[in-house]
Amino acid sequence: MVCALGAAVCFGTATVLQAVAARAAAGGSGGDAALLLRAVRQWRYLAGLGLDGLGFVFQIVALRSVPIYAVGAALASSLAVTAVVAARLLRVRLSRTEWAAVGVVCAGLAMLGLAAGTEGEESGPAALPWVMLGAAGGVLLMWVAGKGLTGRSRALVLGLGAGFGFGVVEVTVRLIDSLDPPDLLTDPALYALLLGGGAAFLLLTSALQRGSVTTATAGMVIGETIGPALVGVVWLGDRTREGLGWLAVLGFAVAVAGALALARFGEAPGTPAVAEPEPAPEPPVRPSPR
Image (cartoon, helix red, strand yellow):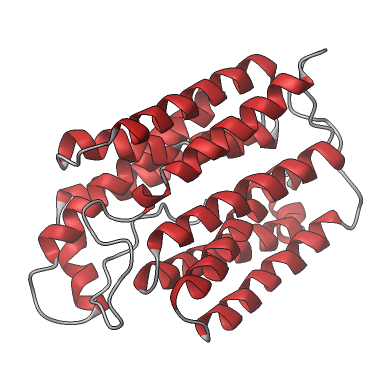
């Protein structure tokens, strides 16, 4: 659980650092590629990428140790970290409601920490890795479908699809049993992880370029928490401590609800929640495929 919270701190802090770099790089000319090149020359953006990598390592360790539902809720809390760090570094003012939402997230995670049991030892049905590979392909289909939409519908579909992709990553980390190259290269779970993570990054980048970033972030939080949590409980044997199932359910719901209340901090702080029809998009401030 400490590693899951460490991943949330890394991802949330990286978001703010990359947002600062994006702001500083936005004054020049050129399109997306030129903006990204200007951003990566800044130490804050590179530091953010380093934190993304460290957070991914923490995430893997957490997923191999505690139930998926606990890790998913902890990762959603990275929005609370983003809000607090943005308030400090970018002088973003948080309302009382937003500070209350941060407190709600912390309370939900505390309940989850008390109630979460150990990682389930079941491997699930033999077809589950193939199902995850199919789900990763479905995420790409959501990208194709979402590109034809506009406004909040586009943001919701792409954000939800990105959440599903990150959820595939969470599940497949648990499904990979052997790291020996012959076994690893023939394991469909590995390809589901790579395809799901890559597709999630693609969808989230597209969602952040146009439409409501708040809607996209909310969709992503829902997609990457509820589905993987159900897979962990139904097929992988994730359980709670004896007699504390109700507390885990309550903590999960409270933590995710608090994260959704802070969904506007999934965008670069200080940018409008709804972009103009043809904006100059900032580099994605979401962590690399997890």
